[in-house]
Amino acid sequence: MSAVRNGHSSSDRIAPLAAIYGDPANRGLAKRDMQTYIEQQKERNNIMTTQPTRPQDAAGSPDLYAPAAPSERFSLFGAGINKPSGLVPHIREATLRDVYRWMNTMRMKELTDKLRSIGDERERKLFKASRLPFATFSGTFSRRCAEGLISHSSLLCFDFDHLGDSHEVMRVKLLLVADPYFETRMAFTSPSGDGLKWITQVDLGRGTHEQWYRAIRNYLQQQYGLSADPAPSSVVSACFLCFDANVMVGEDIAAF
Figure 1 (cartoon, one colour):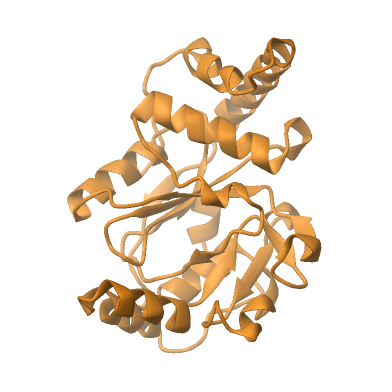
Figure 2 (cartoon, one colour):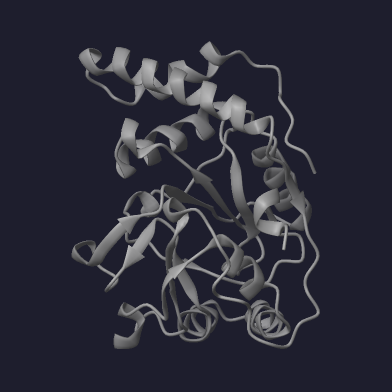
């Protein structure tokens, strides 16, 4: 699927983003920065597409050494987020292509199906915490803590909980993919089956992780009425991985 424009002007997008800075002295800077970023995204959208993909029929481990831009490297962790081992990366420098391949294995499908079959909420949370791998999409870490950050990936992951059934999840997924200003690097249904994980890239030369997260979260609320979980505003935030037959990724990620 190709990304499409929805016809809104750049000025429509900038106003709510600039407003989150609060201090009137900073709003002009925020507005100029966002205008520059929007122009960059327009150029990028001319050469990038995002498309639905089908799962691989693969039983082996994914290739974990696929090439990627250095700014999009992050850490992958094995199952057991609450264990001591959950603080140390299984793979210190991974890529979205690695995640794409890892997610679309039969083993991940089995784990995802098992999770969604559990009726008790407490048992479901325990299963997710103990059995699902996870990623810190915003950076590479020596240990999963703020002090352990090695390098930021320029990626932000937004989490939308309890959207509804699979049709509503797909509707929101397509809505975000079609946004003309923020490129979808990856979008997949959450482990629960009723939410969505959406990953986009930002220019850290024009704002911190926290500033960008607040700005884009506010934009998504203003533009689409979508409320993203505020927790991933921390660079350390972890995102559980799962199987999704309709995961959407940038064309460069799917081309292998």
